[in-house]
Image (cartoon, rainbow, N blue to C red; front, side, top):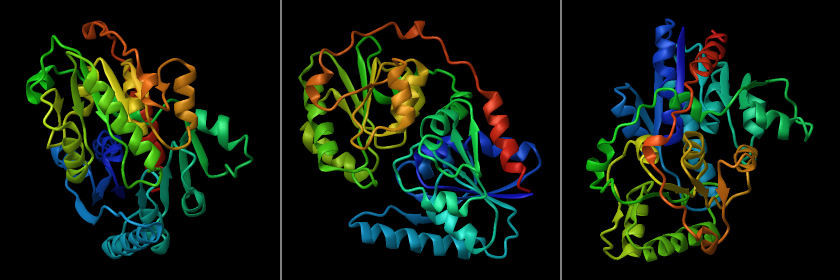
Length: 341
């Protein structure tokens, strides 16, 4: 069985890293394509995964981004034609869905944020995987067509948290003092569908507030070189702000942080599921998953920088228990993928 996996961004690269070897262990041949955007290529390279790069980041107007989606869909279709692929798998990648549909390749996909357009997802996919909380709290309540939907227990981040092992080498790798508080900040994407002036302004305002606090080390995990340059200019050479130039071990950075502030959904959810104090400055509409984590006290959402104060007191990082491994979830998703062969 030949499985075609497409990856568009870093969270998707993390999601598929445990699934790719699991599929091969079950006898599948896996073909991977990836968009050259953010840390996606670096993460797959670090895992030793073979892949083909197709497409790059799209910015500008909505029309420009629409053209980029169409162009990548055409490029993916050209790549896949004649390769005798049995199933196409992604996590809500619209160009991949379109290419698979054009070539009549069965497509399995998923999502965990309901506010982005899902028209193509439900129309073109043969199966759509979502967290059960999203099915029960949103899709069923709004009367969505759920005939193609399969729910799984838990959250997609738990797929790769299963393999997580703490390594305090992250301190030396980033030049951090383990005796001092560490605050990790993930900026919002300045080009994503949820990008907004208000959300970007909140990020820079939060960064200013953090820099006013004494004896704090701030690690900003910029999404690309252009964003890194903007953050560096805003920090004006502040030695307490660390701006890694290469992809870092994000999970270990989160685990060894005293606070994680995220302008996107993934890092906030990762921190919440690892039991690390997590604050969301996401500028888009609140998703069901984030709402659930907020209700259960694992995530806090703020709308202005003053809500950040007072900053949480540092806790003993060594006392945090690791979350239970979700090998069952990896096995379940692997089975769903192979069921389309």
